[in-house]
Image 1 (cartoon, rainbow, N blue to C red):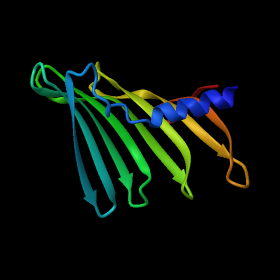
Image 2 (tube, rainbow, N blue to C red):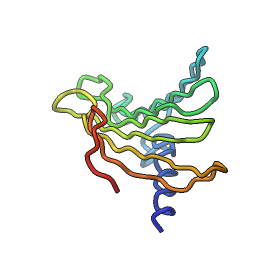
Image 3 (cartoon, one colour):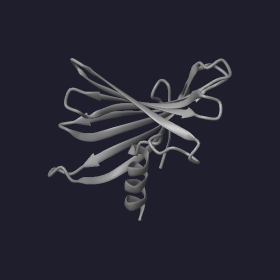
Image 4 (cartoon, rainbow, N blue to C red):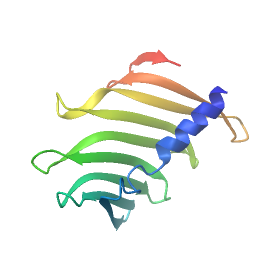
Length: 146
């Protein structure tokens, strides 16, 4: 049961959270940028009632087309982009090994010193055995484990 829950959690975390417009009042804008070492995709939500962008999600891919990170932003009262949350992905031989989830700390105006770490464990054949959930701080010191 835990394995099914964790796999479903992984699927939800990897889904683009900003692609679908909300309440039919928002429009989605997209942009892409190709670089030598990868690709960036950006989805921006424009609130038509106030005629400005208010949320965006940025996806960074490496040259092998593997997602490296996903960062969600919102605008503040000065129309500046402020981070909300970010996901960082690590791979080994093309297989996902780690996801690190961090929230934006509004008090410090920086990414939180605490994060959620999902470690993916594979068997010798490359099949997923388990996903271990670990709470860490900015220095990657162990806090708790589930």
